[in-house]
Length: 260
Image (cartoon, rainbow, N blue to C red; front, side, top):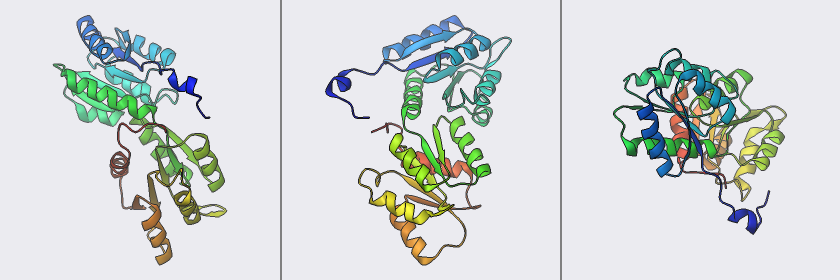
């Protein structure tokens, strides 16, 4: 869709951040800080209310405490990251509980410990909102099991995801909603994925899309030349972890990248 000058002049609404904390003083402090930096804020005084508001409001990000009565932050985080409608909402933990490893395992996008560092909190929320507003990571051609695992890992960390199994579907998806990056297995049904790589590289509007290819252990010299020319990163199947894949994407797609 092409924006008219009138459309372009209309500012986008401020991103909504949901703050979930049972301590009123903490909610007020975080809310005031976020509002000063241009965010809209909704608050919840407990885990159950936080989950209800997350489903109703679909915030751009959630700031979540751990130590809350009845439904604690761990239970809230787990519920969010197992709900297909809410899984892509990034969650910034802001808590006195120093257990970042558990937070990241459950899918937290960032883990901050109290006492509050205002700059650190604003930076973390801003980064996650920008991530969520970007185009998706387009996964092309991976087998269903691998695609599902990769998509779930990306979504748990706040990356939106789109999938395509065939070249034509991939081109249609890119035309509809420009992705922020492409993750591709060139072994496509009914099409040579290396030809698709070259087609993307030739297209003036798409050649700057970051492309990560995941290939088998054996490739021909010509395929290696195409990978060198048309991919920003090449990973070998079975020789990388999901964390390494996420590190590559983070390096290729700056946190302030937005849809163009």
